[in-house]
Amino acid sequence: MRDMQDTRSFRFAPLIAMALAVGCVPAGFRASGAVPDSETPAATIAVADSVETVAAEETGSAAMPVSEAPAEPEKILTAADFFVSAPTSVFPAIDPMTRMDMIDYFKAGSDKPSKNLIGGECRISLDTPEKLVFTTSPVSEYTIALLPAPGRKGKTVIMLSRTLKTPAEDSTVTFYDTDWNELKGLFKVPTLDDWMVEDARKKRADVENAVPFVLAKLEYFPEKQSAVFTNNLPDYIPEESLGIAQSSIRKSITFHWDGKRLVMEK
Image 1 (cartoon, rainbow, N blue to C red):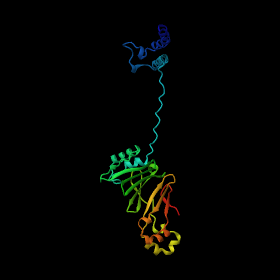
Image 2: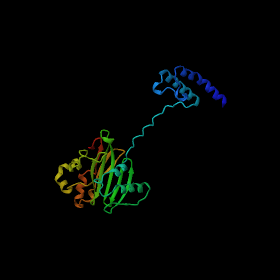
Image 3: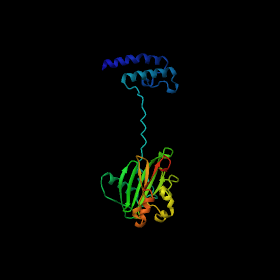
Image 4: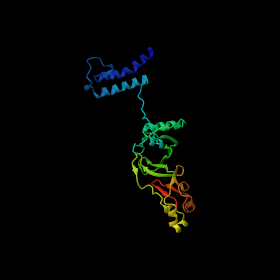
C-alpha cells in the first residue's frame, strides 16, 4: 500500500509544480489564503482538469455514459378494459366496481353472478381480447366487439350489440369511438327487401302480410371481421304463415367490416 501511495504522489508532483508555476494550486491541493476561484487563470484550470483525470484513472471512478431507459410499449386495450371504462350512460345499471367483479369471477372460473343496481344477475360468458359477452338478466345479453379502424383515434371502433328475448331474440347495434362517443353512419339496418330472396319479390304483398318485420340476432366473428344476423322467424311467426315466411326470407345476412363500416354481403 505504501508503494502505491508513493507512485501516485510521484505522478501528481509534475502537475502540482505546473500549477505553482502559474500562481495557483487546484482546489484539491490549495492551502488557505490561495487565489479565489474567480481569479484562477485558464492555465490553472487546465492543470486542475489534468489532476482530476489522473485521480479518476487511479481510483477507477471515471464517469460512465448513462443510457436512457427504454420507453414502455403502449398498452393494448381489450374489450374487458372498455367494458370497465364505459360511462354509466352506456351501462346505467352496472357500476364499474361490479363490472370488475364480473371479470374477476369469470377469470377465476366461477359462475357466481354479480348484482346490478336494479337487482338483476350479471355474468360474463365470453372474454377474449376482441370480444366480451355478458348477460344482465335472463332476457338481456350484451356483446362488446373491438373492430380495427386504422383511420380513427385508438385505431379501434367499439361495436356494442344488445340482444333482447321478446320472446324471439332481436339485436340492436351501436358504435362508439374509444372515448365512448357514439358514431353514426357505420351500419344500415337491413330492410325487408334486404331479407327477401329474389323469387319472393314477385309476391311482395303476401310476404309483407306473413312477415311484418324480421327479428334477428347478431353474432360477431373477430377472426373473419364479420357480423352475422340470423332471423328467428319460427319463434314469433304464426304457424299458418311460417311456410311462406321461411321460403321468402333469407336465413341470415352477413356484414363485413372494411375498416370504416359494416358492409352487407350480397
